Amino acid sequence: MAEKTQRNVISEGYEGLSLYYRGSCPFCRYVSAYLKSKSIVIDSKNITDDKSAFNELVNQGGKRQVPCLRITDGSKTRWLYESTDIITFFEKYQAK
Image 1: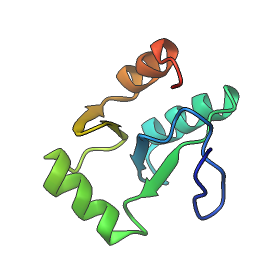
Image 2 (image 1 turned 90 degrees about the horizontal axis):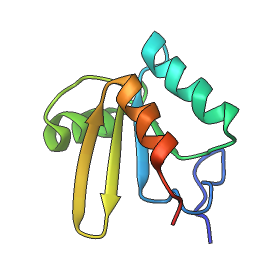
Image 3 (image 1 turned 135 degrees about the vertical axis):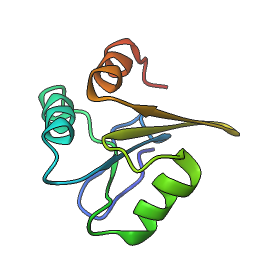
Image 4 (image 1 turned 90 degrees about the vertical axis):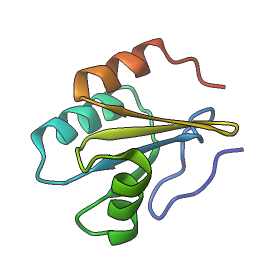
């Protein structure tokens, strides 16, 4: 079953994905608009408003660059940067 976030219910099959973003970033808005157009809701973390999300991004992902998609599959975590790469990932992704 899908998990609840603060405002939205995560789309089933997308529970292991988190998007780190900044509201003022045009590339982040591009990815968000794409997800909305596909009716995909994932965990989203605004690094401007959430300092713990910012720290996760920098300390675990290795960069402060957004947008960034954290992909967790079991014990493996991958950090994907670049808006076009993130959208390409979603175009190929098969929800689990």
